[in-house]
Image (tube, rainbow, N blue to C red):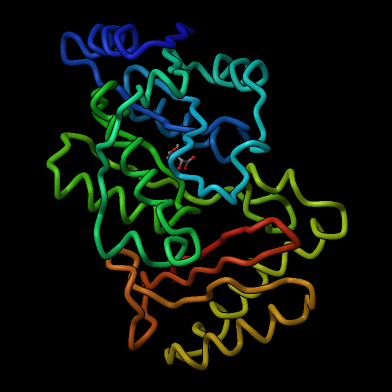
Length: 279
Ligand code: PAF
């Protein structure tokens, strides 16, 4: 696996990888890799001739009060995992390389970026779209792979790609879960044993909504009430949002139907977790 730390080197390596019509698949990450990330790499492998990945803990998507400094970092272990999965090119730039002094240009998907996580994390999605746009310019991938777990991120990146005519196919991959249902996340590492047990309430409440919907209930209010009732069983879990929405516009729906997104974010102590299901 070739590791590039500069934009120039990565850009050139990707150009070579794409020569003579070869398809380049890209998996952007912030490291602290788990099976969820590896499932994206595997999807990229089956879909592309060459797979590139990036590891960059992007400071612009963290607010000053968030966990940038303590975000889990283990480059050696991540590098080994990506190498084992057959990633050919790894981009791991410094912050200065990505945001040279004086960088003041942003990419904002207006309207969508203030919804779901954007409500409680102002500026978060502006940081995500700016870095993803930069990465797309640097790597020029044919396809990029994103997890369905970050459903708002996925919708916002799709919209950015459409609105700015990026020649990149966005491929969404299913959520990978622990045996007990907890959606895999780098932030699960912050949970203590008690919180780890409580954290399954997120997927249990989503399942509860789905089960009620499967009985024929389509009213968002009734579905949400059932989900929140389940969530309240874990007294120390604080809900941030619980929404029944269209997965593209992120707007609330009048009626839950096949393809509707049920999305939740909740706090366990200082850790904020997200999860969702598509009906
Ligand atoms: O989903 C993530 O890990 C990040 O938001 C991404 C897409 C790598 C941008 O920093």
